[in-house]
Image (tube, rainbow, N blue to C red; front, side):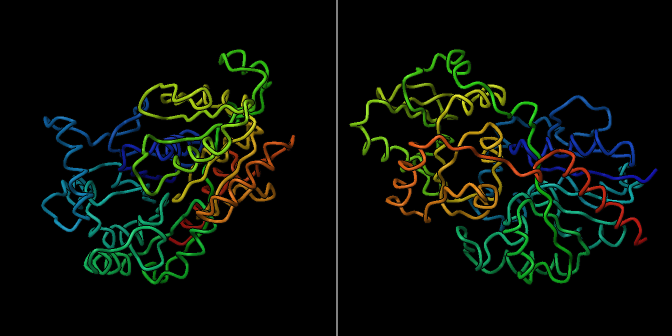
Length: 379
């Protein structure tokens, strides 16, 4: 049986953990899969967590934030738990035919060893953000290098690495195919899956009754992430729409994933973090998902909303139109008036929305299986 080592070294992005858990469980029929993670998020005896230290979580959070603030330019800030010595003494790595990397970060993983790993093993890297490879390059919409040092360093490393790159959207794949930091390596798209056993169409009236929501109002869901001061996020557009339409008594805005539960006004409520099961009920209870994001790589929440048959109004932002394709509710980037126009138009129509099959679990698993098989044939 061929062997695969999953390395996931990012602890705050939940979908990467869902992804490697899915690969581990569903590909076991064909491959032997072992996971090396920063934090272990599930019970699995085939997983090793590298978070073994007497330091407090507060200490590590401080180091992480400081490293981000300094743009990863100072190596002494980087713990680098994973280096070649570590891997050569790690039995699952010794036995692996393929090393699959997920969202590896500089401060947990020594990127300088990538060329060495790629000479010893077949390497797959799934990138959930384009900055994993070309973060502050001149093609990026949002982040720019403070100096050329980090870009040149990363380009030098990746240029000498033999990696099969996987991106989670066609837009990112297309962009990175033309980015010379990728060099001659292959790039393909494999979408992340969503759990349609949780996110699916439910009876709107029943969901509203369970959530104690009014039956006589139009309900608009938004997601704030508690980042009101961030220029990257979108809550200011939601608040402005709420103010502009304050004369309409039949509207209720609900902003989810905030720091606290708070009734801002009779038309605007902020709600604390929800479980996926609760989130699916809110999507099913809502008339519209207002998602004017300004920066995104791949947020499954858009696909989850469509799976619950909840229409979306959003901006033309990175990969987002790729999921909303054939639903056509996309406003011009940062154009508030266009957003407002689409919002009013869609809210007054009883529209049916759909989700493409490429976000199914089986589609994702089959795509990775084909990729693994093709790499193994090259030995």
